[in-house]
Image 1 (cartoon, rainbow, N blue to C red):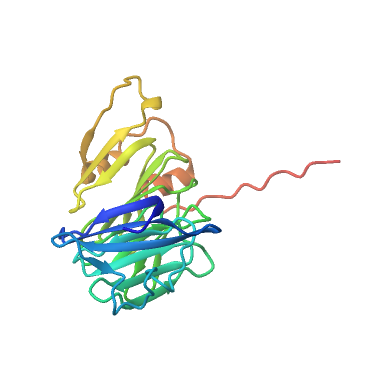
Image 2 (cartoon, rainbow, N blue to C red):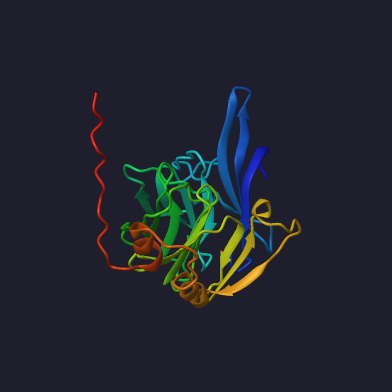
Length: 267
């Protein structure tokens, strides 16, 4: 293992055959560099970088741009290593280190603080870095489906195995939102300040823990809830008259909301 100055991320491949370490290493007295290493679990053999990889002896990936918040994830079949950061998404083959795809972020940087991938490895959900939007990335075409509605930075994303349902959560705006994973349509909003939240692989269950500061009970609490029940309740459990924008956003009513123009202020 190289002399890591700091390890920022590590993880196993889904099949348990490999693990990776991502972090900063000392290169010389003048500074440090960022590298990722992949090892084979059964033998301890260093898989990446390899002799045939597009990398030098000390770096993998040699041409990878380690921007702010660089994160890695294995594809579900354990054959690809996916890197995401402010510059975009890059995919390498684990067997030979060959670069398979490079998808630029475009005009809006990516924030890889949270990532979620479908079971077939075809789509990836990542928040934007400078907005309150997340995007579903098609890794084959590079096309994106935006998820726009949060008013705070998104710090949690989850996607069902088939990609039909996406969950996003923001501790900044205190809400959790469910989306159609194909169209990007917002299905409902839950005005809960979550400490942790997760979505089952089949999209049927939501597991969440309320924020302790918003709850009278200080000990940890966990709740399993069916997503279908939450969608139904969000349309019926209303404790006050909703504004027109809230009716559109929460109840999905197809209504037009008037825009009020403020009265001019006389000098």
